[in-house]
Every structure is written in structure tokens, then in C-alpha cells.
Amino acid sequence: QLKLAVIGGGSSYTPELIDGLIRYYDEFPVAELYLVDIEAGEEKLRIVGELARRMIEKSGKPIRLHVTLDRREAIRDADFVSTQIRVGGLDARSRDEKIPLAHGLIGQETTGAGGFAKALRTIPVILEICREMEELAPNAFLINFTNPAGLVTEAVSKYSKIRSVGLCNLPINTKMQIAELYGVPEWELFIEMVGINHLNWTTRVAIDGRDLTSDFLSKLAGFKGVSMANIPDLEWDAEFIDSVGALPCSYHRYYYMRDEMLLEMEERLRETGKTRADDVKEVEAELFELYKKPELVSKPPQLEKRGGAYYSEAAVQLMKSIYNDVGDIQVVNVRNGGIISCLPDDVAIEVNCVIKSDGPHPIALSKQLPPHIRGLLQIVKAYEELTVEAAVHGDYKAALQALTLHPLVGDVPRAKDVLSDILEKNADYLPQF
Ligand code: NAD
Ligand code: G6P
Ligand code: MN
Image 1 (cartoon, rainbow, N blue to C red):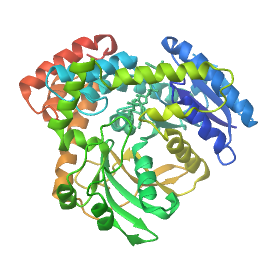
Image 2 (cartoon, helix red, strand yellow; image 1 turned 30 degrees about the horizontal axis):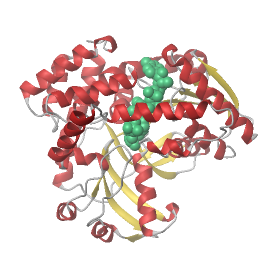
Image 3 (tube, rainbow, N blue to C red; image 1 turned 120 degrees about the vertical axis):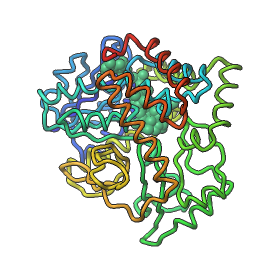
């Protein structure tokens, strides 16, 4: 009797997940599905729960749905626990984006000082969920979608016994978009992705064993590469891309075109008073109005305005391959264990993995990382290691070092100022400090 618990069940992404569970029911037959949330999310959980019930009913699949605020009940004896929570809600995200901007820094949900603040709020809650899993479902897999997904995966792997996999929708979007560029079905395309969450490079593209990496990179001239709904599509510098020999991910724009991205964010905030969190609030309001309609029995296309497109595809593919011991290749966040040799063994990385019943096994890289990739990766990973320590132990010194090291901060006085602002404005969510 396959049991799945979805923590943060009130998320607007849940119908997407239900859609995937229905589509792949024959290969991943979830018998007991728990959607669980906290009191503050009760209203959203109820609306999403009713839509999920209608979707399941229409599908005719024998999935028993439980909508509850009782997390222990949801976790007990689960085979898979997935987390999609936002500690502090969109108001906290809006602060994560606005606080750095007030200090002249990039204000982004997962990258730089904003992602750092989100990590401090989120990691303690996820570790609490892990404690409950250790007690109630010690053999379950934690499928973590909660951002910052790489940092959360690393904290779980360092500080809990639970088997966990970090999941981002960017790799699957990358693969789909490259397959479309070449006009081939996805299963014919092989891509190698190397790096950490929201900072990974596509280092190899092949179809039918034929290496197309340089052809692919030459096609990028005047092409914006892979795009994500939540990130402005500034064009890559063809000469630079060619010199690196790999496709950066959308989030690299915050590093490689920092000034332009910052200017765009500052102007937008000045003119409209808005950041991405404010857009998302509007999209979410629109989505929940739709979800309430009794005639709606499927996920609406409006969901694609969110950055998390195809999340369900990634999540269900992953759980399905673990459940069936498939051994296919998927890009997920796992413990390094020597795969990226210039990083410590115990950190989280995002790379191609073979997915078996005991979880993902990262596979050896096809080529050595060039100095350019290695350098940025090592710096941002060191920032992440320090951030995990800060989040778990409330370690101010680690926090200050982390922010100072981050390429999007990189200055002690500024790191101190932005850190004190973050700690003050998030005090309600930072019991560890
Ligand atoms: P959301 O604001 O809808 O929150 C989801 C649910 O989490 C809400 O119903 C809320 O009540 C609940 N929640 C809040 N605090 C909680 C807590 N302390 N404990 C348990 N539940 C809590 O968020 P969303 O837009 O659905 O995003 C959810 C998460 O997924 C975020 O962390 C977001 O960054 C992440 N996300 C990840 C990816 C990825 O690629 N990995 C893509 C999109 C979104
Ligand atoms: C991207 C990322 C996610 C990120 C999300 C933001 O796809 O992979 O990790 O959180 O989009 O989307 P939003 O619509 O919330 O801005
Ligand atoms: Mn992501």
C-alpha cells in the first residue's frame, strides 16, 4: 500500500502534482495520499484538497485522499514524504527580495542574501520534519522541493539519518527545451548537468551517442538559452559562453550580468513597488479563484505563469523510478561523495544520477571541470556550507562569513548590515538565533 505525504499540501503547485500522480498511476500506484499543512494554510489546503478530490474522482484511480493538519498522522509509515513549504509565506519572500535591494544587492528568492535568509528560516523546520520521519517513517524517502533546495538537501544529509533527494524543475525544463531545439523526443536526448542547485552548467549534449555540445553552444549565439518564467531572459554573451564550453543555467545571470540584473530589479521596485513575490501573490490569487470553481477538474494552464513549471513531472518521475528500481538517469540533488572532486564529500551537488530503489547514485563526470566552473562552484559551495552551519546552530560568525564570501555580497560592512537587517526582520522565524 503505497503511501505519500505531501507537506505544504496547500501549495498552488499541488494540482500539478496530483495531475502527475494520476497520469503515472499505473507505474506509481499511490494508495494513500496525505495533503498536510499548518493552521495558517488551512484555507488554501481546503481549496486545493477539494480540487484534488475532484481530479482524482474524475480519473477513476483508487487513490484515497486525506486532507489534514495532523503532520504526524500524515508521515506515519509513509513511503515517500515530499515537502513544498514556504516558511513565513510570500510576505517573508517579499522581504527576502527587498532587504538586499535596500543594501544595493541582488534581491532573489534563492540566490545571494535573499536565499540565505530563506535558508535560515527553512532549514530548522525541515530538520524538525526529519526528526518526525526518523520516529514515524525511518525508511521513507524525503523528496524535497522546498527552496533553497540544495542547501536544504545538504542540511538534511549532514544532520539527519533520513534518505533525501533534493528536487528542482530547472534540469527537466532544460532537457525539454534542448530537445525542442533539436526537434527530438526527450528520451533520445542526453544532457550532462554539473554543479549545485541554481548554479549548474550543461556540459554535454548528445543525441544517439553523437556529441553535439559544440553545435549546441554555437546555436546559442543570439539565443537566450533555457528560460524560466521567474527570471528575465537577458541574452548570453556568445563569446563568453563559447570560451567556457558549457551552457550556464538561468540563475547564472545574477552572477554573470549582475549589474544589469540589479538595475532592472531596482528600477522595477522604484517604479512599481514590486518584486517577483508581489507578482506571485497576484498569480496565486488568480489560481485560487479558479481552484474554487466546482467545474474545474484539472490543473489550469495559468499555473504555467509560475517558475515551477513541470515540477510534478520531475517529482513523479523520481518517485516512480525509486519505486520501480528503474535505473534511468535524472538530475537531482544528492551528497557529493567524490563525484565533483574539487568539493568536499559531504556537500550536496546537482548532477546526473542513476535512480535505483535505494535512491539516486551520482555518476562520474564525462570531463574535468574547467577552472572557470570550478572556481565559482567552490566559492558558492563554501558559502552554502557556512550557511548550513549558521542555519542549524544559529552561528553568527558562520553567517557573516557566508554572506561576505558570496559573490553577490562580497564585502564585510555590507554583509554585516544586510545580515543584521535579515536577523531583525525574520526574528519570528529564527529560534536558532
Ligand atoms: P506557498 O507559499 O504556497 O507555501 C506552500 C505551503 O507551505 C502553504 O500552504 C503554507 O501554509 C505551508 N507552510 C508555510 N510554513 C510552513 C511551515 N512552517 N511548516 C509547514 N508548512 C508550511 O509556496 P509555493 O509557492 O507552493 O512554494 C513552496 C516551496 O517550493 C517554496 O519553498 C518554493 O521556493 C519552492 N519551490 C521550489 C522549486 C524548485 O525548483 N525546487 C520550484 C518552485 C517552488
Ligand atoms: C524556478 C525554480 C524554483 C523557483 C521558482 C520560482 O523554476 O526552479 O526553484 O523557486 O521557479 O517561481 P515563482 O513563480 O515562485 O517565482
Ligand atoms: Mn529550483
